[in-house]
Amino acid sequence: MDNKLKVGIVGAGIQGISNALFLQKKGYEVTIFDRDNPGSPAASYGNAGHFSPYASLSLNRTDVLTDVPAMLLSSTGPLALKWNYIPKMIPWFVKFILNTSKNKMMHTAKNMHQILDLALPAYDELFDEIDLDGLVENKGILYIWNDKDLKSRELEINVRNELGVHQQLVNKKEIHDLEPNLKPFYHAGVYYPYARHARNPKKILLKFFELFLKKGGKFEKLDIKNIEFKEQQPILKSERDQFMFDKVVIACGAFSRKLTDKLNEKIPLDTERGYHVHFKNCDHLLQRPVIFSNRGFGITPMEQGLRVVGTVEFGGLKNPLSKPRIKNLINNARYMLGDLPDHEDEWLGFRPTLPDFLPVMGPSKNHKNVFYCFGHHHLGWTLGPISGKIISGMIAKENTNLNLDPYSSLRFS
Image (cartoon, rainbow, N blue to C red; front, side, top):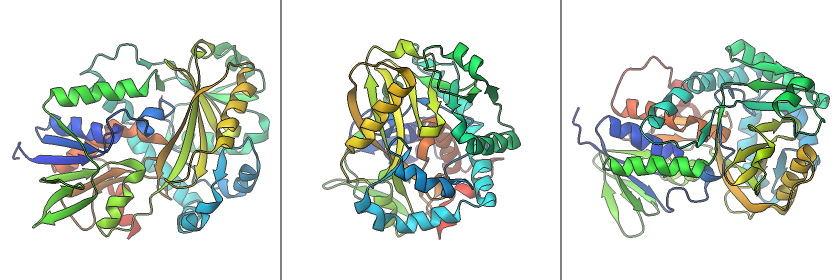
């Protein structure tokens, strides 16, 4: 292999930087492009901070369609729509509904499990090269629910059992022992003792970025508008500049579609808008992330305080932040923990989501030197390093014992 092959990556979030680090391990010369600096308030900054290797079951489940109307009507529920965006979402929703059969649900779950199983070891490969400085805690992740919600929980537990996911069912007393500060509204839960959480996702991302620069990587703060080709070689174009590479990786999350559309590939990428707020100086109240399943939101103890995250809102990339969604998070947090101070930091980010809830990883349909790495919905943070490792292996034409076909963009053509 010619070690000096040049690779350009569009996107400086956890996907782009992970791709860059694994490509550098193989001796490639890598440049990352992003219109913002790494660590800017995008999804890699504002996520829940979970490393969740158990989370193989996604939103495309057999029971979800019966639940959706109630979720949309409930002000405390996990789901919301920006009504002005519905016409644009209809084709996506139709494809989503087609992916909620038992077979499709299990297809997604199996193929998420395949990569989630490798997610923590891939992180550890990168963690070995930086000073983590207490930024990751290994205290597990706890899901709790009240009995209104048992049917959906049984489905999850059964699917994860079938896949061989290690899970520990916990009763009221065990939940209280794990998290004594929670109000006792819960009925039961499940604990994933091997899951981890980030004390500050942005700091971890920036440590990875510093490592990338230290290894000779380059960063250009530019908005890449287009990809053109000279013979087969991709050229990345911003407003004023252009850069030629041997290979290009598109890893800009929910914004990736702007480029894939221009490559004449109809990938039905949309976004689930997610929110967070912080309650400062309250992180001592919880030992680990706690997710309240009925309401589809969670709380993670972080350096910035308690980060309350969640809700899924379908509304595209342009609609402004929804105050009712923020209020929903605050009310839910108080429901769980009682009296909390005023919140800080209202944040909205975009989870890149495909209707079958599998990411797109692999070469473009029309251009063999362009690779995709996006669409990881709620698991972008967990799956960054393993995705980067997989793509770097593809670019280096290495053999793999993984079945990578399910992640190909060809599934949409």
